[in-house]
Image (cartoon, rainbow, N blue to C red; front, side, top):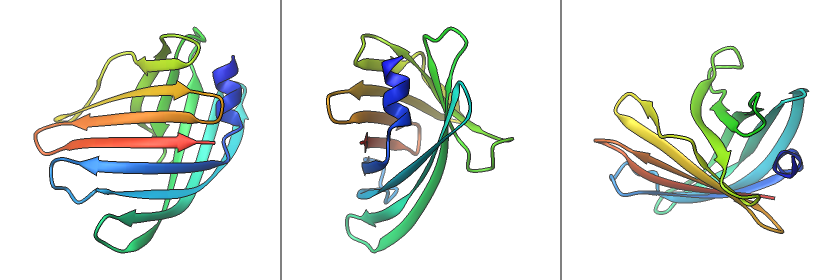
Length: 146
């Protein structure tokens, strides 16, 4: 699967977060991605870099995400490993709409919030676009992996 190979080749990232809810999560960042493949159908992204709020200071960030190729090979799951690999935080499952476009299979409900995403592949990067909507959240997050 070309998408899987492209994900495994990621080594850098940029992102932009916009919040319409006033949470203060407006800003951008960039960093590195260390990929590992602990199992044939699993990729782990260990991300680190710097985040700058639009009107704030520059801060370090780190995240660990697990991508899993589901049994059907027709979907990829993304989980945040903020509590470790044994307690993943499920984010969403993506299914292909074409060879370049993947979309959330359905929005994921986390308390009062809905998480959804789309992923687009082009010749130079993978663009992952998240949306988080809820009573107190209205977040738009874009990641670009190279």
